[in-house]
Image (tube, rainbow, N blue to C red; front, top):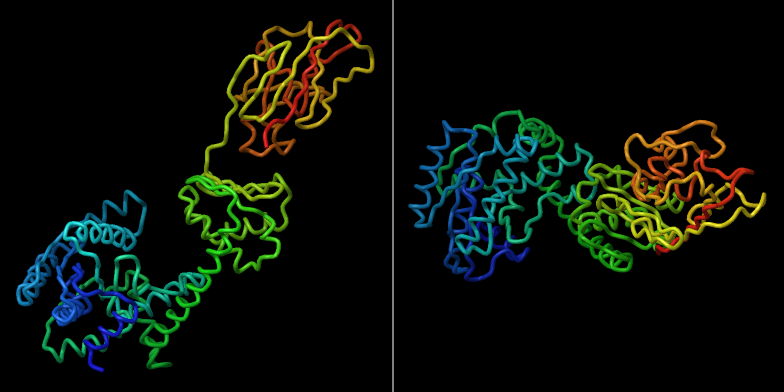
Length: 465
């Protein structure tokens, strides 16, 4: 099979090109992109293709860029193909986004390809990645500790991006160019060992070739095996996730817990990763965080939670696990209706207030329990109306049985109140004094005594789901 037939075979294998399509081809002047453009040109008549070449100036090699542009223009002129050039500011983008230069260049490059394909009505973007690029990527990701998804390497097709040379080695590409007497230029940055990929290409892979002369083909096939397995796993994950989702928005996803109890950890990781990737506000969670979430699911109690970077919280409930990046809810301030009922929507509770005559020694100052609590206070020590609000910095009170004042922040820590729920715990105030941390503890200064004549009785009922 000759070289062009191999390119056509790869294109058909992955359904890259349809007859009559417009294709935008990346052209840098290097051997891979030059080979790609010539191969597409040779396929042009057979597939009735419309081909446009695009050169992207990264702004990193000003001394070489002008010559490369003229070289690429000349190639396109000889092939009678349209030529375009665009510029990107990689250094500024890297600084602004706090990225390394290679990642910044990659992001901007793909953005320009997308924009230009839209301008030219090109349905496909053809890039010159080769089997050597595939091998380098697999080794690089292996060294960085990637899982099976990362080790599947560069996809031959991703959306509208196609890579017709992905199963052809660089050596074969260079032999084709020599046989066709096609000239190309070498990007000087590819000869420097400043980047990991270049060190792998220039140092590590030549050593591996001494052990296995066919190492490029071997690694390329290994990546293909990983991709096949990934497709199968993705099918399983899709079916599983459809059964797991309870509720979902852009900032949160809630999954049923019971299926996780019988789920293999391998599938659990993938399901969680997919759920996270499909929820905009959760992206960026790393492998170690996935392990923390699994530990919470398997061994945590209802109400336990994990706090992750970016304000993301994972909360285990009785029947679901909630992953959210929504800002914690904050209680709105209001006046307590006495006598009467006051609904605190954010806290999900109703407070029923009444003032009664002293009922004798059987009346207790103690709360009866979280969210089914009773607060009993000396009404004559209070300044009405009473205010309900969330905590503020510097708040303190004198808890029953503690003997001295305590900061609300320290009290919440001692009571293990989750950080994201501290601003929905209602505080009831008389003037500027906190008389009750609702559901937790009353203030000793307002407790009933033998001299108490009137009692404020507050009953709390939970109304949230």
